[in-house]
Amino acid sequence: MKKINQTRYAILGILTTGCRIGYQIKQKIDNSLNHFWKISYGQIYPTLKQLVEDGLAIVQDSVQDGKPDRKEYILTAKGEEELRNWLKFPLEDIPVNKNEVLLKLFFGRHQDNELMVTFIQSYQEILQNRFSTYEGIEASIRSCSQESADAQYWLFTLDYGKRITAAEIGWCEDTIAKLK
Amino acid sequence: MKKINQTRYAILGILTTGCRIGYQIKQKIDNSLNHFWKISYGQIYPTLKQLVEDGLAIVQDSVQDGKPDRKEYILTAKGEEELRNWLKFPLEDIPVNKNEVLLKLFFGRHQDNELMVTFIQSYQEILQNRFSTYEGIEASIRSCSQESADAQYWLFTLDYGKRITAAEIGWCEDTIAKLK
DNA sequence: GATCCCATGTAATCGGTTACATGATTCC
DNA sequence: GGAATCATGTAACCGATTACATGGGATC
Image 1 (cartoon, protein in one colour):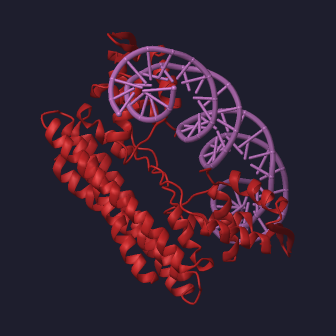
Image 2 (cartoon, chains in turn cyan, green, red, blue):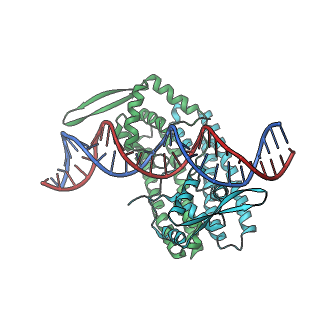
Image 3 (cartoon, protein in one colour):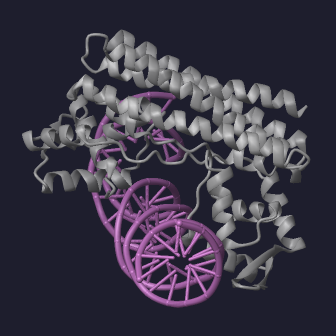
């Protein structure tokens, strides 16, 4: 089975959420999908161009008074269909999530246990911050977009983020204890 | 801070575990590190060549009677030092784990809830198989290599795999229930 | 004879990051 | 005046996958 470039569909999807500007797409993904997706401008702008070429979106210059112009992208009917087709399409194989902490820990016998503990501690701190971020996003979804048809689904993905992060934090705690 | 190519160190590390053949390195990673690392022959063979060029390993032809020859790679003192240096080196930023199920779920309002449920169910099945695999690996580490100095660390990484997978399975269950 | 496993390797391609360039506006 | 934010874009590079090529041995 041939692989699909999902980044294209991530952008297609974001365009249905009220985001119409390249710059905003990056922000949206960084702020709301950051626990399961990321993207760079080096992908966004060429992809948007491509979407227009393929007739999945149209561009229009949006002139703002006192602010620089920007390009507004709006999905066409064909673009919306393309999105729905992708949504229906079966899942690909789950890719492996590489993890440097685990890789180093796997070779732990060549390393000071003490240093390994500090690594896991710093990892744990990052996870705790991450968890707080998710709680913040959750609160903002519940307040700002409770009425939105998207809110329900966004909360499902956040729930995932929180659970996995909590499980990781628990592992850190217990593993640190075992290493001491 | 400049990024490090960790694949190189993954191979360096595997060479300390009794694995000396390119083909075996792939097997070892697929069988024991599969919950946090993966690799292809397209990386392994060129990297092994590079390690020898850099004086981190030596090669020797290993002639087997009745079987085709193969190349044995053995770490040099310099190679072992390089591994320990990397182990001491601070962790990089945690990369984002992309997740197609969550991406599709995020755009769930454009999709049939029923179809989404079948997707999550198939995801859950894969996770359950994965969990069983981890239990199998755990059993084999506990029996075969209990005495090995590596065993302790390998069990730590497995514990991580099992916890995260269990958390994911729990999320699948609950999310399916909510979608119905 | 076919198929599977062992074993080594390379070239094309792809997805993605990074660095760089440009320029306007706002805030201190 | 300087920094931060908004905004768009490209080119070089890199890590990794994929497809392909080759060939021996074992099993059915």
